[in-house]
Image (cartoon, rainbow over all chains, first blue to last red; front, side, top):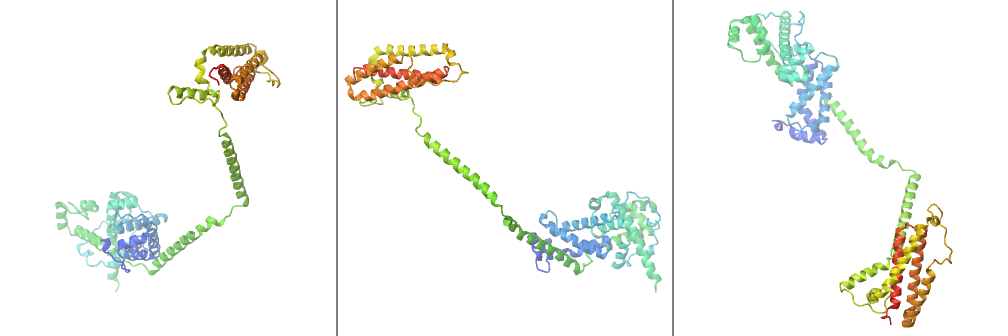
Length: 199
Length: 285
């Protein structure tokens, strides 16, 4: 429950929202502290760039504070904020000319397509995935795969929501997610193999 | 089910429950089972990344700086806005124009008020008005017999039916006037509309007025002999009604189709006939 969340200043989220609507600087800070990690992590995962993630976090919160007067509570505040943050990031990526929307049923090339080889049972990633490796692997994903993967597997959006946010079909979202996961599996295995070679 | 068939549907089914056929294949195919296991593990571990990163303190400092700047800008606008309201003073010419208009309004207002006051009581109804009123009141029994000191013109209705023999005299006079009007209308060349109206000389006496002058003198003598106190008033009334007749006749000469002048002339002649009847009334003192 949002009301139960308390900021460092002792304000509940609902109190902070109401006071922020009146222009209370302390309430702004309270809301920032309550949601900064998720917003920043989202920005960082989707851009794979710390400076850009900070810039986008700033932009997302400034937009939040400018529009907070329009928040009527129809949805959870965190849902409203995160959707706004996703849009801020996607807007930036579009401006940079990155292809956010993977092409439907793309002709797969040897380089882009995860290998069909499924691997042996003993090559399973179980027990060998740590956060750092996963983080690096996600950063290594092509931007199109990364966007879908982060939105679905990290942020928990459903395919219909992703299709709406990104502007693609639900089938395309599912397809790209599967390819992103297969690519990650390959990257993680490669990373594990490299570690094993190194003394 | 083969490995290829499972791989083909894997994007759709990896996050859902498996069918019996798919479950059976996974139990017998370690390769496919490893892939599914890895994909599910990646999805599970990835979710733990949500909100795992902390932005540096610089982010909030930048946000705060931006918010402060916006706040200062808003305060500056709020402070300067009221100043703008009184910052520019209009030139003296503007006030002069306003004052001029106000003065004109005031002068016009005074003129209108003065003219309106002058209108008060400026119009007098014809004697017929009061006669009609008095007749109606008497018929309804609302007024009593008028005293003798009252205006002889207003007193006329009291006795006019007792002197019915004088009615033909009045009728004759009306016929005479009507005949004169008819004659004037029949000779439009003297009063052509497109000709300028020539003012009559002061000593002009209309034809027929000499006869009336004789009759006036007779009636005045009659009143003087029977009620000397009323002579002056009677003379004034005769003079007024004759002037009234002359004015109406002059108007009709200028415009023979003037219906208002015609009606005025008829009223005046009736009034004079009433005066004649009054002089002949035996009830006079």
